[in-house]
Image (cartoon, rainbow, N blue to C red; front, side, top):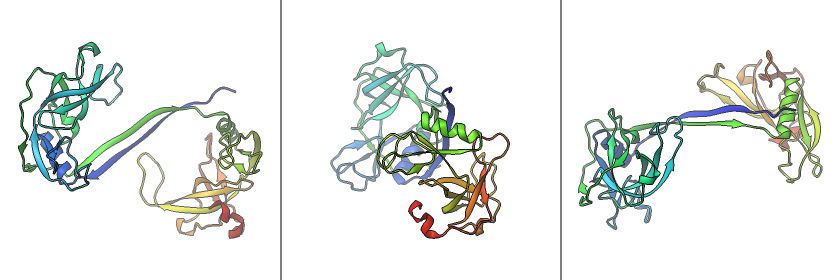
Length: 313
């Protein structure tokens, strides 16, 4: 049987509100101003934090540091990935900005790794368009200068304060299932649901994992289960997901298939969302040439007794 594999992308925007320290730091970047924060011991942290990492005391004493600094350590990146700071080979560096006692992580534009060393002097290269994000620093570049900068007090106030921060999180990878998931997926293409039985505890797990999650021993005995099952628990989804053509509200449930000892999850349709309940008997619905059920619908059978599925909740 050929090895199955599929490209997968996990992507979502992460938005958070900013406190006064982070708001000042990102707002400063828009104005080509680098801010740190001073601790009670006199250390200057840049990037600034809202709490002292040593004492957990709240920090608010903002100071301006220089756009020049010293590389403390580095790693060469010969093959930049999409969305990284530079499209050509570059170095990831930790830079201790002049006036700061901690280092900031960013990219360094350099001809090659042979030009790099800890202790080299660099400066900020600002982005042409700045929005109040760490990308307002386009990168660092080599720059010969002396370190004579003393941090100066700063109010942290700017005309256009950045109060929200949105970062796109994205992970691209290729998934290759093992033997047991491959058998499961192959059976689904024939509208069959196959799990595996543990030789020790004799429980049947769907989807199979190739090993019993309870006993830790390998599983190999294939067992066809379902296709009908019982709703053990569920949630009502009221937020529409991007690129998902399903109208809200809808119900997502854990379903214990007949003959299985582990509940899998699936969408419930064919019934008003407010009529879905624990114990509801359901069956899978395939559409077109899909390799897995599109959703589950009520079978019309009487609800299962709670004692029949309570161990699978």
